[in-house]
Image 1 (cartoon, one colour):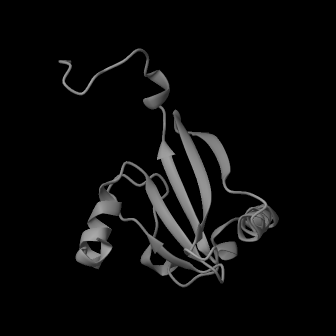
Image 2 (cartoon, rainbow, N blue to C red; image 1 turned 90 degrees about the vertical axis):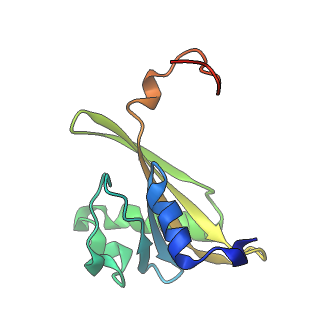
Length: 130
């Protein structure tokens, strides 16, 4: 059914999600980021076409390379980190993106503010009031 969605519709969907998305292709080049108004880590259009290693502080490039290498090789299916940022808890995950044949296409970074999620208790059903 994907054939019926335009690129514009897909971008609108990605921009609506309550997460920030960044895609780094198989050559370690940043090729997409969602443009939601409440992005945790702001992105500039200038980041498109840059090597992901050039988007991080020099002292952490070896960690970036290790994460990407583990995802590319299949050693890891996810790399997850969390940080405290301006009084909020930010959850950052990296996933390998593969085609149907299992070929590595790139890495998807998913960043989410989980502060409010950590406060959820009990249940709230779809049709419950409140």
